[in-house]
Length: 311
Image (cartoon, rainbow, N blue to C red; front, side, top):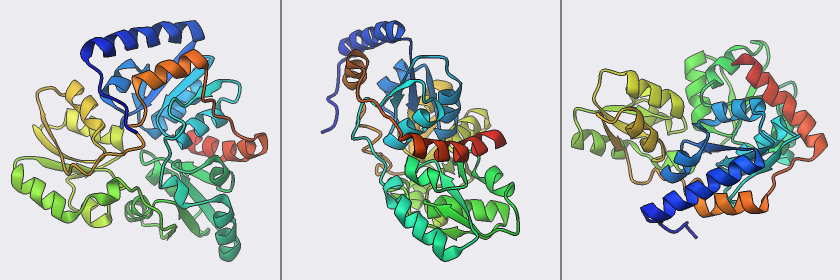
């Protein structure tokens, strides 16, 4: 069930209660750019997967309240095992992350032999533990560029991001056939219609989109990269090819510019499950807590730390 819509007074009252509890718990609230506007507004830090991983590793708070999806909270627990990590909506998963399991990856590695596994952070802790290095859409090109040329690479699980990285690096890779259910919905026809409706607008897209959609973009980058480009660009109008949550920060940072979602299909239902009510309850009850098995954590930590060392 989707969170109910709150009026302005309820949002203000609940936000105030959250801020009070946050101080009492010595907590930090991290929110992904695809979260609801009111969730972004109560967060201490709003960012993409890479930035949130960095914040989780660096924070001196005792409690991390992660407003995102399950694999993100798991990464925070891997990087900061001494801290309490809360995921206000325990059912907020990621269909792409579910498209690869540790046992499936083990079988593929056995088939391929001497292969390096590059895991998008949109994977479970168990899958990260079976991988050699992680990446995000912000640093995937840089990560792949550092890897030995004489080793075959297996890129998991996003075939669309992998295709873009392969083009940018010139590196051949075997792609796992996973994808983001939200970004993969955007079609060439959707973009053509948006361009016809807003002919003056630049089209900027996330590399999780399908390759033929990405090929149409004037600029391709992670969520943070798209925001920075749009804010700094001389262009005044943009068609946005990523999840609609990014519009909140774009309109805050560039209020005089025009931003149009490339398709109404670009909404991640899992990212929208988190509500102010759930964040407040989570801080009150200190639940649901996300933990990672120590053996899995130790192996997964290596792949995350290798990624963070490259940034």
